[in-house]
Amino acid sequence: MAADTAAVLAAMMLAAGLFLLIWGAVALTRAIPGWWRLLAIPAALALLWFVLFPLTVAINVTNRPPSPLGSATPAADGLAYRNVAFRTADGVRLSAWYIPARNGAAAVVLPGSGSTRTTVLPQAAVLARHGYGALW
Image 1 (tube, one colour):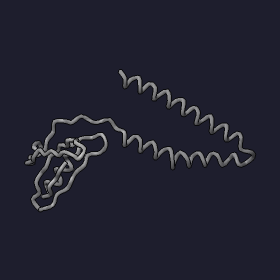
Image 2 (cartoon, helix red, strand yellow; image 1 turned 90 degrees about the vertical axis):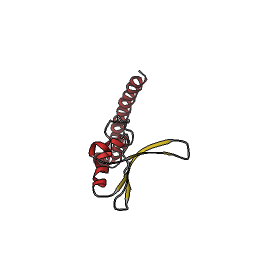
Image 3 (cartoon, helix red, strand yellow; image 1 turned 60 degrees about the vertical axis):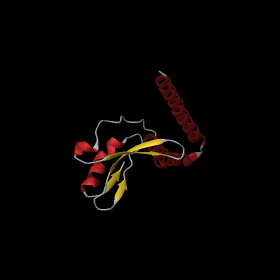
Image 4 (cartoon, one colour; image 1 turned 180 degrees about the horizontal axis):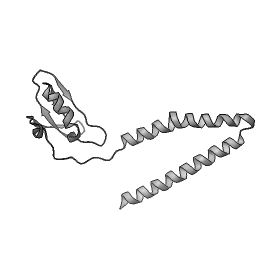
């Protein structure tokens, strides 16, 4: 229920922010004298393209909710693997799968923001099929 309230508040703040942004842009444009007013359009487009659009994409990509773990394992692709676990310096337990290398080289495969190790299973399987070890 708290997520619904937060979503409603976020939508209200977004609407208020967009209203204030548009109102401020119109007020600024009206305050500019003469033909200089025409420069407001390309300046606004440049601001949108080079500042707001990249910022929106960055926030969207880095704030994804966690995806479900899934039930797939490397055994589904016919790969022998080991479950391994690490404890970090601050006490967090990290779990991973490890496929031993056949050619002496290994790679660490990291899932992206909000994803889990099952989402990068196909990439690790490609590495393992080519003789590389994989930890993910």
